[in-house]
Image: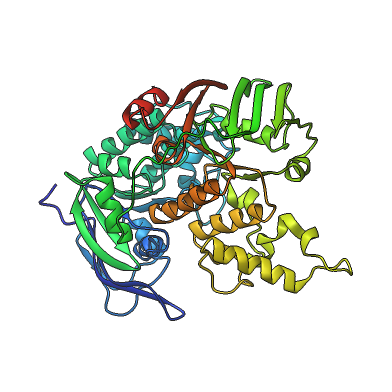
Length: 498
């Protein structure tokens, strides 16, 4: 398709928000039928560029913009849609109570005035879109009953019904297993073969290099460069994105001689997990990995007192715990950082300062029983300094921070409780590679001070590099234990993704 004009040809694109230069003289080009990666850390300008291409934002004067060979002075959302530009955001924006067919073809029902629904035409449009993807789904199934991988396919099919010729996919595999990821990548290849251009935005660099032919790298709002993915390595791409050389060396230590802090024996709960037994020692980072649905998060909820086990025992420093709620867990010395920091970790409209002290309000009250502004200020300043949280002012809403800095605020909230055990459930979800390195540096520092850490992740490479031991969970059971010093990453991934 090299004889066709590019799907996108933008140059000299800049965008300023209140004096902050979100984009500075950026160029971006994607060929028709090409699978292209847009890479960069959170805050580098990826979302701003996508919103300019789709007409949500208008660039500063002087930008040169062309879609499918047509030069445009300005782009509106309606114009972008008419030219075949579609975006599938991470939240998918689908309707769980509607059927697959209705979700795929509902835009064909929209109009200026009410009219009767032509169900036959709706089904035909949905069938045609799925056929283009070479995928079969039950058109009458309620979307809410389907796994996330099937919903991704529905979102893509919906774009095709609208005659999409260029599709942006934002973190499309963040919640998928390896098998589901492979199936989605096969769908992307089908789109490419049929002439649809796809721009992939993902923090999972391995799949970026696998599916894309070229990668455009942004850093701090500027174009670093455009590179062929052939011959590119994850380490090199990380360097281009961050401007730093990150250390991927295995850091496992022998902690077998350290005293046990958390002992779990025969823990079971319904059909979520069964007969789970392990020991977590002082200063140890114990990795727990497995596919989504293996029971990892369900186990963490029981360990944190959010749910009760049907059988088994939990001991903390030799004392049997009988927890009725997470308050009992916090009082005992257990802290939990959820994988969903937006819903369970932070209160987005509230300030950074208020979020950081939520778990220790009693500690910062004065003699009058009211909150002490001085104690709160000192505590927040301590953890901002200790965790190197990049903030404007403590009074700013926590929603103003990047994903990596939000996660550090969550850590600060729980570390302020002075826990003995810290459970980290997928702590880098939605966090870019540079911020991930900073978070794991903090994890190692905390372990060196004696904190026992349970590190849960569905990315095997994360636990392989950062854990002292790794447990493999599948089907609600612990099915394997690995020493990263003697088990190559490839072998561990083969076992987990089998």
